[in-house]
Image (tube, rainbow, N blue to C red; front, top):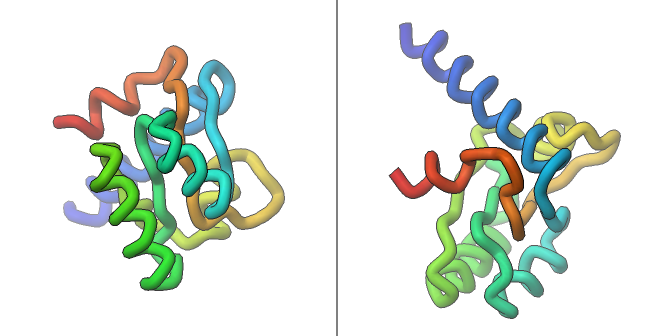
Length: 109
């Protein structure tokens, strides 16, 4: 049962990410996510599971300062890039505007 629930959660987050990419604004990558966190524009930060610990802790620290929620993506950076529809890996992304997606309300709960 736990495997099926985890798979449904992954499909849910992937479909919400696809909707955010179509209708909202995102920044992909470590440096641009850090910039958007520092400027206070980021609404949500997604971090891949295999992001190096130092980068992960730095992103979490900046997110804590800017009061931005952080979601730890269960897949690797390759899987995060694939779920975003890109042909390259992406370890970090920041959502600036969710658009039509309800991904921000789900992360608050």
